[in-house]
Length: 306
Length: 171
Image (cartoon, rainbow over all chains, first blue to last red; front, top):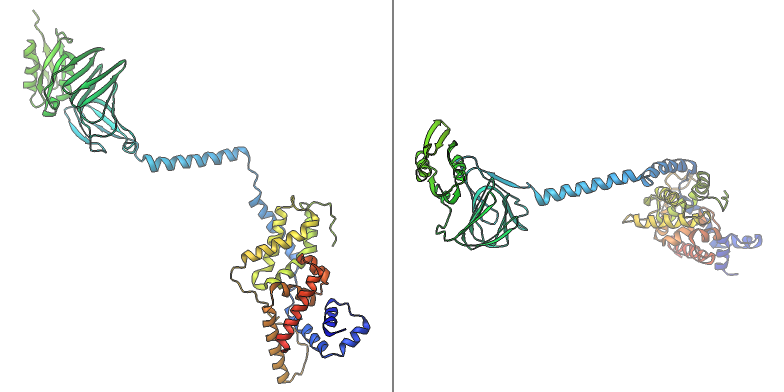
């Protein structure tokens, strides 16, 4: 038996008594014994099984709580709801921001609004315009009550939504006037499409379309390039007289009391926004009416009592 | 400690018995293979936590193999750049009294060479060798522990011994 075999048997602890006796005589044995002694210094520290188990059991129970959480369907639904709410809020704040912009004018006030695409809107007295700045790229849509003159920049379809109907254009100049039971569109350049209830009208430049008290009225050959009110004059083409009086009330802070007047008679003419006296003359004289200032803000307009 | 084969690991008693049976071996295995710097204690804990979490999937007979594999993998992934270094126990009781200074120096040098040599062994050689020499594990036990054949264990131990002697004795 050579040295290697001896060593291997020694390592396996399978040397017989006689073999061990023989092996002890060799120099290898002394070296191995020395190594064997020295190597004990590398012994792993004693492992305290009970203590380690106690530690493990502590972690096991706390770990269990973290890992195996019983989630009821109700809780899960709440979590899902919370995630959805957060997502919606995030979407709202990122994409919608301040929802809509609204511009309102009061009596005798006019204002100009610049829309996100540089389209311009001039609002007449007692009017309101609202639009969504964030959705503007997707949809050019404004909501209007009252009267406004639009100068629409060329581009996608532009809609004016009103109580009287929807006015759609691609890019032109037009005036929309929406009052109680009154809807009027005047196109100055380009072409305007109007959807008002059953009525669908294509309105070319110089044309006027109006529904007043359910009566459709169309007029052609309007020469003006912008509505009169932009120049502080309200102009009327065959407008029932009551709407003229309402316009007067909007431009001057007055209430008009009409006596013995046919409010449905048609009026064509104009009045200034700068001088009440002159304006009253403008609307009363052609119809042979008398006016009288009753109070500071009240006008009495009377027809021929004879 | 014997653990009945049919029992479920999810049962507290069975689990504790498994711990008592394997924790120390697992600890020693990790200690010798990766050294004290790689938290053998924590790795044993982690392995048993994992066994507990998977107690429905692991059968008792496979628990030991599961533990060793898990602990080994966890240590490997945690190994990062930590050096494996076994240290000669500092507080080792003196074996001799009245040594000559020359002898003391010789001993010191011998231990230093041994320490270096042990750390230069491959983790596999070191594990097998120390489990055999220090822990007194039989070849067959080591083979089962490491999932290799008894012959391979014998070879590893012998190679490790030869390497150590070469470096320590200059043979």
